[in-house]
Image 1 (spheres, rainbow, N blue to C red):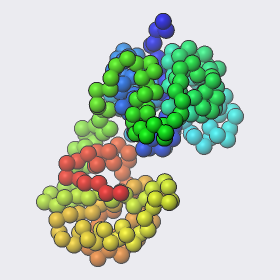
Image 2 (cartoon, rainbow, N blue to C red):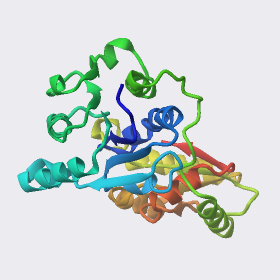
Image 3 (cartoon, rainbow, N blue to C red):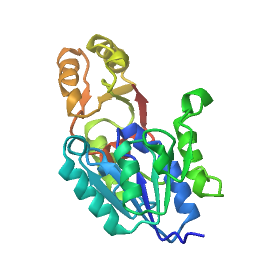
Image 4 (cartoon, rainbow, N blue to C red):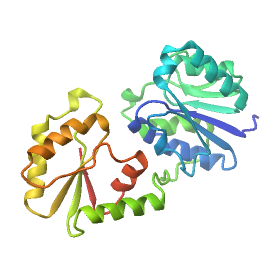
Length: 263
């Protein structure tokens, strides 16, 4: 029986994929309430995890540097080896991560059976598409390899109370409280799924025209150009918060009761 004191959880890709692993991490916290839990994540999305009650440490990495620099990979291996983790879960399959966990001497290595999955000692076949499972359920199945508990349905708050109060106050100053706020995200990481600006412009105009709804544009810096064009051309008032909110602030904004979401 391996005594579990320190856990490493690895998910280093995009924001949506990271968020859909929060239930799995919460299951680990339910199972090992006194263990130290570190989440390795790309620094671009690390902000959303900091301060989360299920996570003791956020280990930020540079995904681009990881792919191009052997020196960076060696340094990361040394860091993981010195941390002396007892259990590691690689949620996104990656040859280097699987090799790193093996080379670091982590005794219990969990992940998907692909990309050098033979270096793991507890794994599942990566057939999520064939099983028609939601990504959250697939991630819970993976965590279930080291847990006999059932997920309790929660995944913890993404924003602290102070941030929620600050964003709520800011929103109240900019938009009258009698209006329902509609959050519109005019972008996507997949170009094939992206609407053109004309459709977002039409939606904003229709929402704002009746006076009941107040459209608010959100997103990262990569969406600022399309948001500015929508605001410039819209005949009705549109609030543009694109690229100005941190991930914590965005989570707080989307969690407000008066905010509806449209993408």
